[in-house]
Image (cartoon, rainbow, N blue to C red; front, top):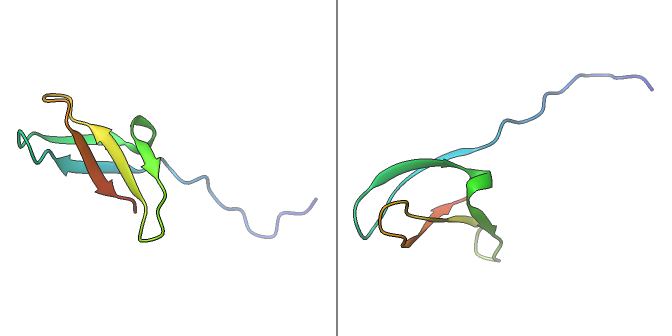
Length: 60
């Protein structure tokens, strides 16, 4: 095998969101949420650590 150009493994994506219910601002890694795939666009679902409401963030 011959490597023509060495790439690098992408780091895990970090997201920041604000809960629409309690207004808590928090960051999370993509692996901590659930990625949802839809025709109109993908997003990551995460549960707010304070009020347990589901928050959605558009997937980058």
